[in-house]
Image 1: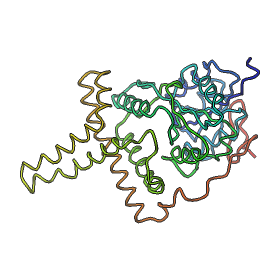
Image 2 (image 1 turned 120 degrees about the horizontal axis):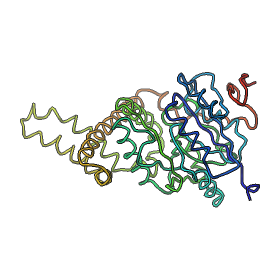
Image 3 (image 1 turned 135 degrees about the horizontal axis):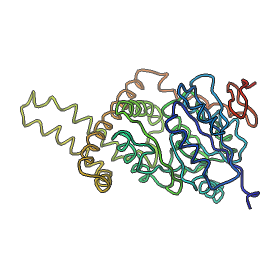
Image 4 (image 1 turned 180 degrees about the vertical axis):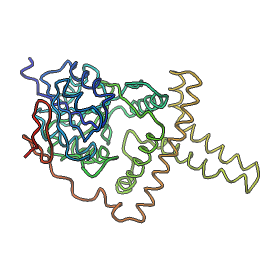
Length: 360
């Protein structure tokens, strides 16, 4: 029976995730599917990531310079021998049947380009309330997107190796929107689905500042892509979520009004806050149903700051789009060349069971 199964390569891009990597690799080892090849691609980590992977007997590929997730994924794909590639970020611990379910879905529908999983509402490791916030928020947004989408949820997804080669690799120039760009290119020929049948528990940012910076830049770099397409990605970025960010921005922008028009003008920013909360009412009901009211209040406050960060990123991106032709054209250049398969990718080094010689 197993002889008829397509071989799968699990590719684990990693940068300084020694905290999560043992859990990620242990979960891959416990997959019910075989045959299974596992590759860790370390993107110039400065922690113990490489030592941890090697101690667990997992082959490690090393990028020569820190190039980001896109470069790491491309490197793994270029070295993979499997007919199906399953990408899982090093801060994700897959459910035991995640690979098996994804393969079954791909085999059932030849027109399916990629199968993306959905993370659990609890963080992989918990040390701060920000991790709790992000796990609940991202789970709710992902569950609301279940079905066919036009973006790629790259933290855990399966794709046929020939479809990956046909689409081309991730754009190595992109660090914040490489998955959105890839989903756009893949969606031109194939369908993409996100499903709770493929599950995993994900690690998240521990600090609010790190989370806000990430979301700011993701909003900024989406502007030239969405300006070109004249629409949001289908399934994840809904109109209500966009309006929640707009209303949060208006609440802050109108705060000075009472200084000019008197206390009655305070109703304007308060109304904007109310609209922002109303736009995300479904998510807040979900959170309050699962957690205590005190945490719910904390969640609402953090999400208001998240909406501000997203809005700030979009405003900054819009200004760059107006002033910079280079920024406007960031997604307009021809797509990158397909990775080399089989064999080694240029510019990658191997470690662990694959040796430590530079690739030719």
